[in-house]
Image (cartoon, rainbow, N blue to C red):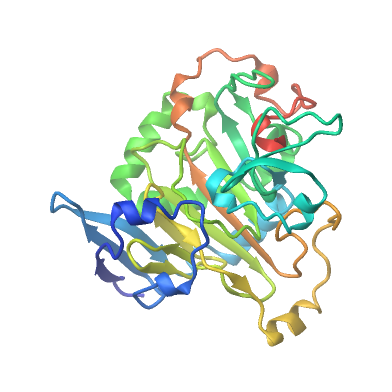
Length: 345
């Protein structure tokens, strides 16, 4: 396929300008370079004059068989969540979910609400989106005070989790191939807590998103010496949904079988996802893939098309987990009725 093209970009927005846009929607007007659709490496020069990798994209490098494995194993694991912070966007007071509730103390992408007893909620939450972590997670000091563990939906869908591992392991192999230094550092760290590592990878955790257009944010909680790893499974037809770095004017159109290694500590987002009339006609012919209750109001999940994204990473605080953990929290049968705060808030 030949060597990938190399793009050198620069900052089109200052650090202060882009930080002030946190939690807002980003559209195509921020794209200054033609959207990346072929094998491409993108670099920039930092404030110290050092060339840095922003992203590496490879087209159709994951087999259709592995993509099918990922779809059948994980398509139902992007569960509703109200804990995605700035990435969930400004509180949509006119959306189905919030129109049913009395919200109070709203501030940008977070809000409190009145409970059924009339009291104000103790926690502030975000727009409800289909986004859920599987794999391992560090201890939670709040709410249930859970230890380091397999997440709830991993335990309750354990067979699907293990069936899909070849798909995740392929993502890891692309990470190793394209960003070997970061992969080596991350694998070394992950191996320190091998009982909390996804087998055959340098990852502890995978966040699965369904039709979730993220607002401007930077990833938090992941290993700082690593790199972000993104792949997408598309079903049906749609346009947009580019992964965009507005500060650098760069966007990538990631589709099924593609892989994107990206610096998730830079500000990033998605452009709008939309259907043309031709897309709508095609999508109407699709057999339903999900059983959704439209009254819930989770953003994006009632579309005919599906954009399923997988973000694979190592949780930074996994390194602080003990070596000896109650096996009940690491197996499919253990404490399956106790749900993780990150999954149910």
